[in-house]
Each structure stands twice: as structure tokens, then as C-alpha cells.
Image (cartoon, rainbow, N blue to C red; front, side):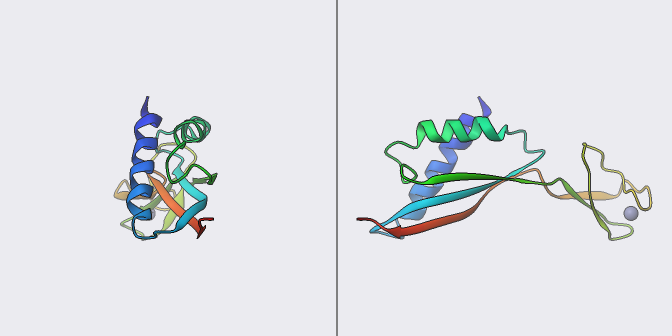
Length: 116
Ligand SMILES: [Zn+2]
């Protein structure tokens, strides 16, 4: 399952990060999930809740935000968002476009506080 590997990655990243902050713990984490990342937000969240035991995220509140699918037209330089996977520019009909957000999963925020 796709989500399982993402969870392992998130846990690995937070473990690495927390080495720089000894004596702190994570109280809140916000994940930004692209609408076209191929990840099911609910599945990812329940997988994280399940696997976070004995990880730096054990006591963290997990929040998920959905990032819209955004495209930039290289011809008319406009940005636009689309509900579906359609890369044509609605302003000039160009296909000379690039995806600028909505494909990835990002660790947006980590809130830390002193452990104990
Ligand atoms: Zn355009």
C-alpha cells in the first residue's frame, strides 16, 4: 500500500529532525497533501495514527490539509487551478504548461514543545 511507504518516510524524516532538538517533543504535525499526489488523506491519517507508536509523532496531533492542483502557463505566464487532470491553459489554450503544486506531499508544520 502506497500510504504505508509514505508513513515510513514521514516517521524517518521526523526522527532525523528531532535529533536536532533534544528534549523536545512534537505536539502537532500538519501535512499538506496534493490533490493529485495519489494519496488518500483518510488512509494516510489512519496509517500514521497506527504506526506513530514509539515514534516522535506518538503524542502529536495529526492534521491534514489538501493542496489544490495548480498549473502555470509558460506562454501567457498565468497560474490556474484545475479540478481534474487537464494541463491545457484556460486563458490561451496552450499546452506549454507546468504543474506547480498539487502533486506532492509536504510536511508543512511541526509544533514542538519541551518534553516533560
Ligand atoms: Zn496560457
